[in-house]
Image (cartoon, rainbow, N blue to C red; front, side):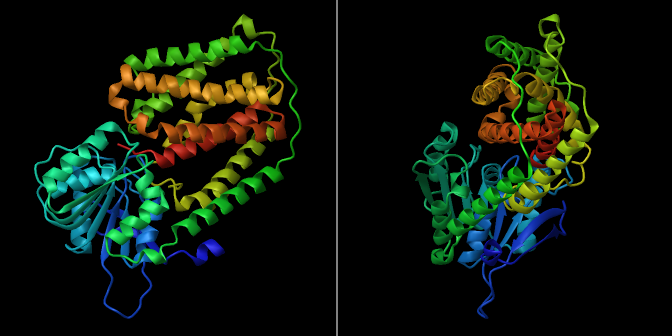
Length: 449
């Protein structure tokens, strides 16, 4: 209730332009004065308008009329991503909202704005962590370029180049102790942007929103944890070095296969289809190793339908409460047209890996050792993924940018799946839970092409 009290009024819909463009409109409270300036907010690659939440709400607090849009292939857009189509959406949104509209772009959004500004006139542009773009001019009356001093070197190096091109109409910031997404997530930097645009920084309530969002998230997780009665798992006899060798071997197998062919490339999810293919091949490799005579002495229980239903209900709780009620403010959690059919396929692709996790790692005793090995194998997966996209499959190198999000998601999923396993005492129920949560998250988040 307190969180809702500090939210600006907003509405969602689709701009009637070509291509149809989903949006969230954040209203500035009417004061009877002249209408506030409008701001068009454009997100980066593989995210959505919800990720620009702190920036959008802060701008509304500061006195602006804000429209945050989804680019094609992202969020609620049912179209596939294409650069020309994305630029067309921004161009037509600018015309629809008024030629004097202020535009704010992050990462890919900033790059698209730079492309457009090379040939079209803008009033004010804010470019947050813009990627290197081959341009000779930037047509704008006023420009702000900001990136973090810990951002990717090529992005940091591009800032002075863009400043020279746009001089004297540009101001640039190198934000201390800031990474790629800091300009849209750090309340201090968000407030500076609002004030640079002429808004009232004193009315920005980003810190309060972060605190109340964190409280809601913790409350949702605590509720789910409390509802699950947990018992200790019976420890399984295993060799830790052998298990690590199996995970390393399966990851190596995945890189070798993906160098030549990706069995799930037809899902058409930019860069993330490599991630999904890696998970599928690694999981299948681990299951095959487990079925060899080396692991034949280990007891494998039969799947229990009742327990699997419990695991599915736990997934519904996570996706509906933790995801839909809480996290949907800052993450896109809905499955729009074109994403529903991807959800079960991604879930099935992850199932072999999660079954291997629950049969092998989860029952290692004591519990701390199991958790350490779980986290170690997630780090191992990430290391192999990054090695693969930086050596064999460089066209998928975008995964480097979203690697921190992937590892944080996997760590959270590991501990949540452990709660389900200890409640149901069923590795298959826990694996189904993990596969459903990951399938939904990946289907909702990643850009379609």
